[in-house]
Length: 352
Length: 212
Figure 1 (cartoon, rainbow over the protein chains, first blue to last red):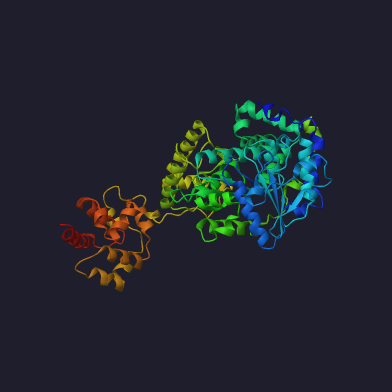
Figure 2 (cartoon, rainbow over the protein chains, first blue to last red):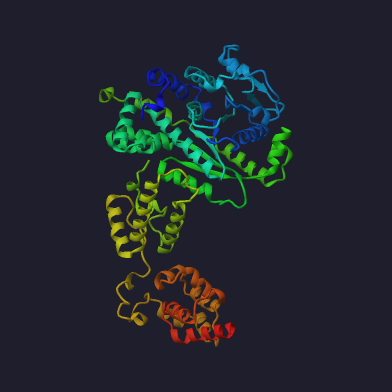
């Protein structure tokens, strides 16, 4: 089963290369800017990722922060529509196809001062299945851009694309609605991110050994419960277990409950975060419920920012609270950098 | 991930080491809801087998923590292992009471110490006790005057706090039958080493008038 997850993926074969490339993200001088990258994901489609990303971007820009919105939902991009920008010929594809030299050339100025967008509207139809190399190219390019805030609007699902973009930063926002379908998907995404992070931290060979060991102990454990991996790592190699645990604890993930209706349990978000901390072992902070409002539909249809048009609604008040939280929460730095280095430097002898 | 077996009884119930029995009951009830079959909070996170295992662990945690003796032994073990600090564990208000009451002598022997002289000499208590009729509010004032929390009484009398509150707030329709009410009141008053019979009858007199 351990094989399944990596099929068709160049990572195992090029582990060293991969690490070197990825490390650039965490250890270069640009790492200071990395700290304000906020991926926004949620697993399920329609939970409000683009809506939140768009409104958060507009709000941050209006507060005087130079903000970049990146539509990272490559197959189904529509962040531009959310903030009232029509079809754009410039897109991420241009950078990948070498039509332009730098990612900066794909950035569009919006009519809102301080707000910039990398649109996905003009993406080629095959951008959704971008090969790994291209993804790394984008990562490196993003890390070189200099913005106060960079918001990544991720697609639904738990494909490697989504997860890797999530892990570009130690902070991230998970969006869910108070419905079992959405909660199921957000848990799935969280676990996928979790497993991927461990894989990033350990060398390929090592990771495989661990997966096999975990599988041997409990069938299906790796596929469904990446958290069991940690206990196996901790037992076999306490040192590495500690490092991995620390890296997971450095996550600054937030959870937002969108489309909250008054009959829903207001404690749901808090309880979910507590469960994640207790059973998955990494911090997840609940930052609030955002009320459901039919007017959101109206705003999307009119292609106007919700906060502009419907300021005097509960939803707008909730949104503002959410935005303020992100403004204050600027994550505190990349603790995963040193951790990764430590692993790289661990004596290889044990792994052979 | 911290496997279930690694979580202490306190952690699995989301409680601090010094939690009161009242808090333990509440936490247990909340946990049963969170981990129930149709709970939205953990939807899809655990398999049926895991949920079952969690519930077994919850029951075990609750049974241990709610039993004073077991909890004490468990705390000692945690202290030895360095999981909790000496002094952070809960100390029961009825420590000295634990062994009495079996022979029916609870009326005179099992109250917390030190309360008796205060209760009778306290001018506010005197004033309250001198009344013809006693209301739930009077009982509450008396309790507050003596600095006792509802929780402490609940723990000592084994009457649930909600019921005690109903008594104190004179919510007649929430009260149990006369017989039960009488025995609840008696237990309540006995906590303060006061003459239970006269107080109970004064409270009941009014209730019976009000209920008719």
